[in-house]
Image (cartoon, one colour):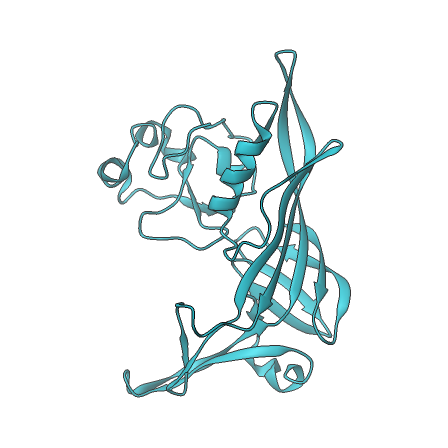
Length: 257
């Protein structure tokens, strides 16, 4: 369990908060005694739907669920937090190479995004609330950077996708050989599922099946060698004592440092 330091802003709040990372791919924070949870940044919702009445005057929500004429049934309502800005600091470890000597140092991954009203002229997925089509806010990434020693590596701001796979790859290209991110994302034995993944926290760890994983270099071999094997779901920024730098095979995602 870890805590990410963060800063939250909306029309009624401007405050520092702690985001509790439970280690089970759940992110939690509390404001005004109301708890919000998510498995991926940008998709926080009320942890308890019963809190909606006391929260609706303090926060903006998209309400989804209810009756569906297509399914001819009703679902529980979900309340997605909208129209806010969040800045998060995620501590990470970097392997620094200098004069052919490697050493591990602490660094900080800086993430900043805001949710803005959806432009209905742009295609996107939608939700239903009592048979009415609803759109979640668009996510605008304002900052995604790595602060290491006295330097900050920034990628281009104002991206509209908070996808850690894409953003971390771009950061890695900028840091070059001197600084190498040391986490699940750059580990030899982690991968994304070919069935799809969220923007954060859905990496599959195959450290218990190393020999099988090292045979994987494309999608067909993923199914040939890994289908049906047990794996652990980890966050991109997690680090364990079984870490090995990703150099031996491409895996399904095709990433080799």
